[in-house]
Length: 152
Length: 132
Image 1: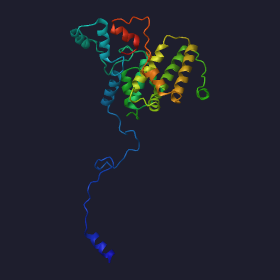
Image 2 (image 1 turned 90 degrees about the vertical axis):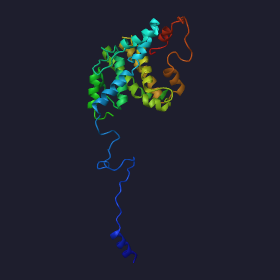
Image 3 (image 1 turned 135 degrees about the vertical axis):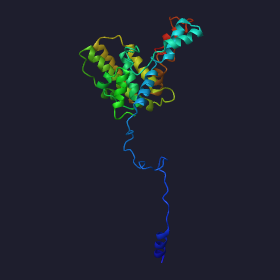
């Protein structure tokens, strides 16, 4: 009896398929069911993002930071505030994508290694020593990180 | 400390300055790579960030930048490795790390000796550290 009733109901009842939520709250899309197999993103980093982040790391390095440089100058010559702003404009070291750490930024070899270590930390990489020795300028750093499969 | 002796092996002498130099960089890298562990075990998150620690390590190296004798560099490297091992094995306490590497060389006891402590703010900063 119960079985017959169940079959009758099941024949007619139609439950609409609604979209369910996945664990992280996003809707199940066509590709939403595919989960990446590693904690690293499988997608490669965007070139522009790599450039921006590399430049940020270099700019935040204490010896490169332009504001600190200007402050030091201002202390030395005890400048009037008017000159201070002029100095700030002229004294800023331009950190661009084609900058060389030692030639353009006046850093030494230890600073270079330190910057490479900062980049390692930023992109969660481990750059082997031989490769790390070769990275001495911004373009090389960007290229290495952009081509590295594990950069994130 | 026996466990320190076990974990630090005396490497063969560097034959040239170039080799000593590359070893120095290698050691600097390994020290930098252990920064996250050090931050973790000494719970330094609220007082310092990794890049400050990295600069502190670099300034320790820079203090000896003038040395050109490979044997002396080897000896300093050994001492550095010993120090790093002690730190990563938690043979030190939190205040050792803070006093030595976070507060910096000026330490808790300020060195106010014969140097000119006069009016110049710039000179004071210049005496007190590498980065200002």
